[in-house]
Length: 145
Image 1 (cartoon, rainbow, N blue to C red):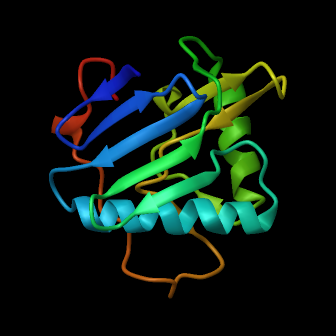
Image 2: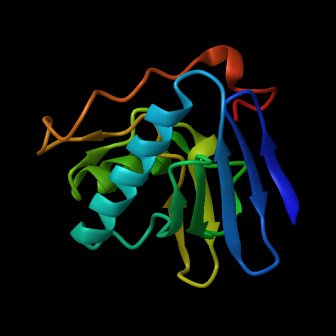
C-alpha cells in the first residue's frame, strides 16, 4: 500500500487493489468516522457518482475502506472549483471544506470527484445526528491535507 496522507486526524493509504483505506484518529475521531460514513451512504442513496463508495466500515477500529476516486488535483480554476462543490449540493450535501485538496480526477469517469466528507452537512436532513466537527487547521498538514 502507498501512504497518501498521514496527519493527526487520519492515516490514508491507497491499496494496490484500487481501494482507499482510511483510519481515523485524534480529535473526535469516532464522530468524524461515523459522520463520514453517514454522508457517503446518503450520497450513494442519492445517486451521486462522483464521490467514494463505502466498501467496509469498522466502527471498532475506526477504519473505513472506500472506492478510489482518482488522483489528487493540483491546479483548478476558482470557477471550476465552485462548480464542482455546487454540483454536490444538488445531491443534498454541502461539503464544508471546499478546497482543492478534496478534489480528485477520475480518468475512468472522465470527471472531477470529491473526497473527505468528515465535515459535510446533509442539507435536507439536519436531524440526522450530531453536527459535524469543525476542521482543525492545525491538522491540515503542509499542503492543507
